Image 1 (cartoon, helix red, strand yellow):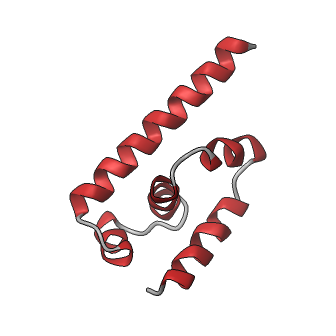
Image 2 (cartoon, helix red, strand yellow):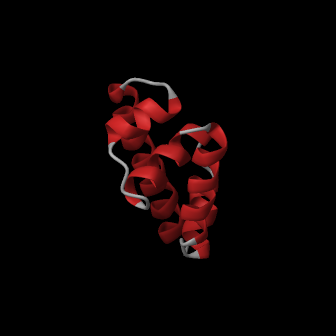
Length: 82
């Protein structure tokens, strides 16, 4: 998968998210955003993503975990602030 194809998939996946979630996802790093959206929105496997972005399967797994943890913290802060 080319870099352009990958970015198109990520942008398309982002467009389906509610605006609050889009804002939170925008605060992730590029790699975290790619991995999170490709796994949970497009349904790609961690192995497919690793191959597409040129990292190991373990790196994809760590990126996925760190992106979810960061989103949890962002939403927890938002809830507590209200």
